[in-house]
Each structure stands twice: as structure tokens, then as C-alpha cells.
Image (cartoon, rainbow, N blue to C red):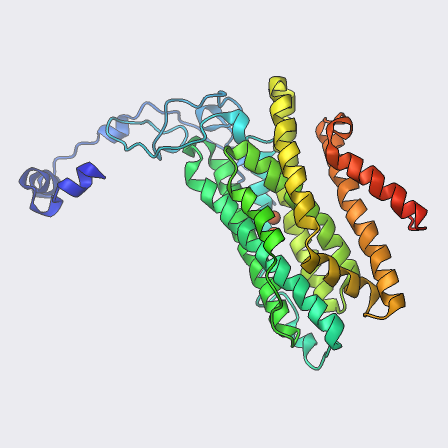
Length: 381
Ligand SMILES: [Fe+2]
Ligand SMILES: [Fe+2]
């Protein structure tokens, strides 16, 4: 900013002369027309789909040949443009492909755009008119929605805070991350709207949940953030949404969970494909990924144990506070907790890290929990 802030362009005679020169003389500079860039003619691979980012994967504009360390670009020059002297340093932190690239990166953004929905108009809010939930389940639903709003606000902040740090040569990833922030803003919106339409107002914020979530913002690298957010936290959230859909007291709630799940699956999909990409292309990073997982699993395990969530879940699953309700609620909540861990390890298997089961303390917790559940007669599928 030093250059801009010490120059008053409106008072700079040379600058004004240059500005007026073309208008006065009609003489054009046109040096930009001589840019040493490639001429291409991209085509729609599928006219029904339209012109996608994948269709632009051609020559110097494409992403296939982005080297591990991007070309000498620290500005906002779009990939493939000529970069003249004098472009400012945008100070990107992430200029290595291994930090953020994923198989099918470009398709995640396209999908995000084509599957946007609207929390104001796509949810049949009017169907809640006259629906009065009993106090206990109504408050439990509101607590779940309060908790989820909290989750989604940090899920919005985390990709958003990384966005300006990503090298502009990774335009497809940047676009996906921007779309993710928008998805998460919509999730926070829909959960807040549902909490406030339960008739019971918001319930309570959760210290343990917030401490666990705050860790997502503290990651030292994009890759570490992606393991913690896309793979572990959003993986857990995906299982949570599926169970929440199952426990939904109304069709409106079911619809909300179906829509957020669709977005969440995409975020987890990107995380898995990034993880897989790193394992396949940079096998030397395997140990670093284990270290990221050690931390992320530990913290997400703590967050998942938040009383504010567990108790609300038990009540929604059991339908009330009577002894038999609570017994039934605990059964389903236990199945949910174990399923969350099981699916986490299944995702890691699919990403090419089956040895995680032997390395992870969370897997020991899972096995202990599973044995205890079976002893208590709780079946898992
Ligand atoms: Fe979300
Ligand atoms: Fe998400």
C-alpha cells in the first residue's frame, strides 16, 4: 500500500498527462495486444452441461500441467495470462499443488453452482403453521439447531479465511472454497430459521463444541485445515445429518437435512479427493497426514461428546424424558456415535489409508464403545 498511499493520483501531473494522452491524441499503446499467450478454442464436451471449467483445461490455461510449485505468480494474474512488471504481490500462502489439489477439483465447484438452493423459498416453512412440538422435544430440536448454527458459522469462517491465501493459479480450488463458504452460510441460515420456528427460541451455546471447532481455524496449513475440516469434522457432520434426518419430527426438518447433506457430501468429497491425491502423488507426506489426523480425531471426538448435543439427541431419538424414552434414546445415540467413528475409518480406507485403524487412538475408543454397546444389547449394522 505504500506506493498507492503516498501517491495522490488525482494531483500527479505525469499520471494525468498519461491518462489524457490517449484521449487527446488518439494514439494507442496496444502493448497488451502483443501478450505472449496462447490462442485456444475450448469447446463444450457436453452441450447439455454447458461450458465447464474442465472444458477450459487446455494448454497453458489448463490445470493438468500445473507444476507442484506454481509458476512465478504471486499476483492476481489469471493462470495463462502474461504477467507484466509491476503487478502487486498478493502474498499467497499456498502456492504448492500438493497443499490443496484434489482429483476432480473442477467438478466440485460446478456441482456447487448447479445445486444451490434457497433456505428462504425451498423449505416449505408454511407447513410448520400449527405444528406445535411438545416442550421437551421442541426444546431438544431447538438445541440441536442452536448447536448446528454454531457449527456452521465456524464452517463458513474457515474456508473463507483461507480463500485470499490461495495462489490465484488454483482458480478451480479457490472457486470451490468460495462456494463452500456460501453453502455453510446457507446452512447457518437454515438452522437458525428452524431453531426460531420451533416456538421455543434458541437454546444454549456449547463451550466444548466451540473449543473443538475453533481448532479448525488454528490449522497451520491448508492441508491440515482440510484434513480437520473436510475430512474429519464434515465427515462427522455428514453422519450427524443422516441421523438427524432419521430423527426429524416433521417433513420440513427432513427436507432441511436432505438439502444440507447434499452440500456436506460435496465438501467431504473434496476433502477425500484431496487426501487421496496427496497420498498417491506425495507418499512421503503419509506421516504428516497421520499427525494431522491424530489432532483432528482427538478434537472432534471431544466436540462430539458435547452434552448440549448428546442430550438433545437422546431426547429426539427417544421421544421424551420418560425412562423408556431415555433408554431408547441412548440406544440410538450410541449407534450414531459408533457409526460416526465407523464411517470415518471407512472413508480413510477409501482414501488409501487402511493402516489408520492400527495407528489411531480413536479406533481403540471405537472398539471399546462397540464392545460395550454389544454387551448392552445394542446392535450395529
Ligand atoms: Fe455445513
Ligand atoms: Fe460443509
